[in-house]
Amino acid sequence: MDVLVKMVEHHVWLTGELIERGARLDAATLDRPIELSVEGIDDDISIRYLLDRLVWQEEMWLASVEDRPFQVPECGRQVVTPIPELRTRHADAGARFVALVNQLNEDGRFDESFVDTTCEPPRVFTYGGMVAHVLTFAAHRRSLLLGAFHTAGIKDLSSGDPMHFVAEGN
Image (tube, rainbow, N blue to C red):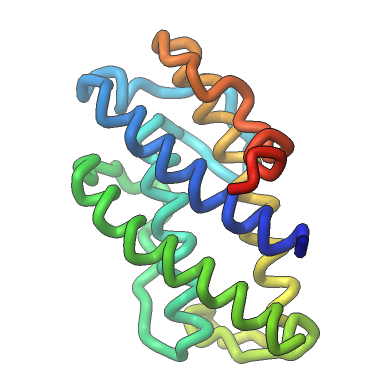
């Protein structure tokens, strides 16, 4: 088993599950501010904002690795993305992100670098650093979402622990 690949698969799976749980909520609950935030990472957050951020993070890094343009959303913007749109975008980006990580793993390329042209000015990162970044910040956002869903009465994902995902052979 490659633990890093399993962690990415878990991240993509759990993001999809979180989007599905978001579909059960009304707009007021989706957009209600989450009082616990971490300054400098995410401010003025809601369930909808965090779901949107998880999806566009996949999209942004795919664009970066593929050297395609990507418009990073403006910080502090009000997020109004409908759940069906997030579901569609995540189905595409999540599958492509897992495929990318699998390919990088198979080719042994995590220590190779690439130029991220989505940054201003462009910056150089390693593929392994990019994957570690995605998993680290996504874990923070997923934890906030799981707590917000718990408050909203949706408790079936528990803590979203990857240990169970891996043990079940997913």
